[in-house]
Length: 127
Image (cartoon, rainbow, N blue to C red; front, side, top):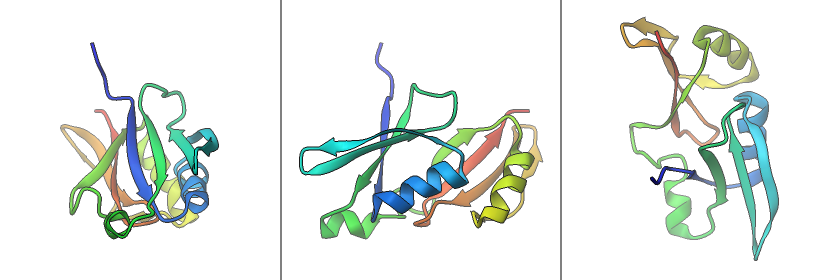
């Protein structure tokens, strides 16, 4: 069967995007190499390689216009954690913008945050 392998995140500058996803969110930098006229950059959460994020440079006006708004008002990505509150406590002092504090319910514990461009991300811990 087929499965999702790569999700594109449009960015205005790949270096700050790499720094945000690796230094602040704790993702691993998997690839950073020339790709024709551009640069192929992929990151993924630690211990996960089945789905990676491609940090693609927005070059056209149309692409630049949707940086940070790829899912509109919705969370663009959701990712799992084994300890939502610990991740929140680790990331907040690093300057990660959270949209509230972690909330718990029957579905687990989660909190929304924003990437460096304002894309909403959801950090989720199973109950």
